[in-house]
Image 1 (cartoon, rainbow, N blue to C red):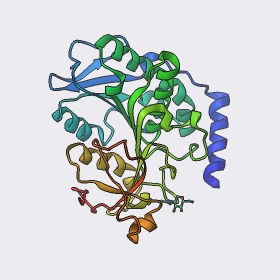
Image 2 (image 1 turned 180 degrees about the vertical axis):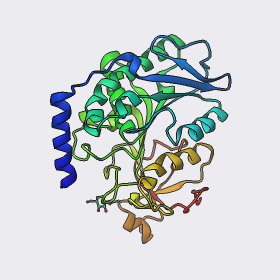
Image 3 (image 1 turned 135 degrees about the vertical axis):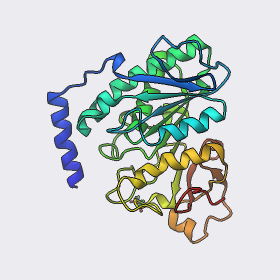
Image 4 (image 1 turned 90 degrees about the horizontal axis):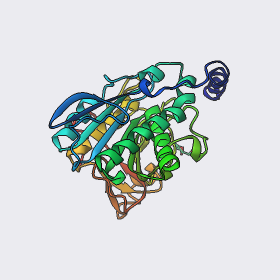
Length: 295
Ligand SMILES: *[C@@H]1O[C@H](CO)[C@@H](O)[C@H](O)[C@H]1NC(C)=O
C-alpha cells in the first residue's frame, strides 16, 4: 500500500512540475560488433559499420543506470561473439531522476528509440523482425513504449522484446498501453526474478513467454541484498545467450511445478533461444552462482 501511495504522490509531482522534456540528443547510442567498438551513432546517422546481415540487439538499462550498467558488458560480449550488432543505449539524462519523473518520460523516450529503430531498419535494409530490444527494469517498459511507437509512427512491428525483470512500481495494475505488453513486438519474452513482496520486479505475465526462475521470488538463490534478485534477470539471460541449458517447464504455478504436477508439460529455453511457438508461463530452478543453469 505505502508503495502505491508514494508512487501516486511522486507521479503527481512529476506530472505537474517537471513535465516530460525529452530531446533526441538526450539518448545516446553506441554500436559494437566484430568491426567496431563503442561507436557513437544516432538517429539517421548509423555510420558504416553496421553488419547488415546480422541481427541487431539493442540494450536498455534501468532506473539510475547509464552506459556502465552492470549487465551491459557481459551481454554485449556474448552477443558480439555470436556475430550480432549490439547497440547499447544510455538514457541516463532521464533515468537519473526521481523515479516518477523517469516513468513519466518513458512514452516520450520510447518515441525517440522508435525513430532510431525505424531509421536503422530503413537505411540499413535490416528487417524489423531481426531487431531485438532487451530492457531491464524501467528499461523493459521503455522497450515496450518503443515497440508501441514503431507501430504507431511507422506501421512496423519490432521482432522481439525481452523484458528483464520489468519494474513493478506504477506498472502492476497499468493497462497495456501504459507498460510493456505482448502486443509491442512479434515476440515478447520476460524473465521475472524479483516479483515477491518488497521486490522491484513485476508479478505479472506481460509476454508471450514468461520465465519464472525459482518461482520469480524476490530473494533469488545466492542473493542477500537488494538489488541482487532484480539484477539476476539480465545475468540469467546473458548466460542463456551462449547456452541452451535453462530448460523450463510450462506450468500454472511454481508450487505445481515444484510438486512435479507439470513434469510432462512442454519445455522451453530461457535466454536467446526461447521458442515462441510454445507460449505461457515457464518455471525452472537455478544454481546459486554462475553457471546458473541446471539443464
Ligand atoms: C504473484 O502473485 C500471485 C497471485 O497473487 C501469488 O500467488 C504469487 O505468489 C506471487 N508471486 C511471487 C513471486 O510473489
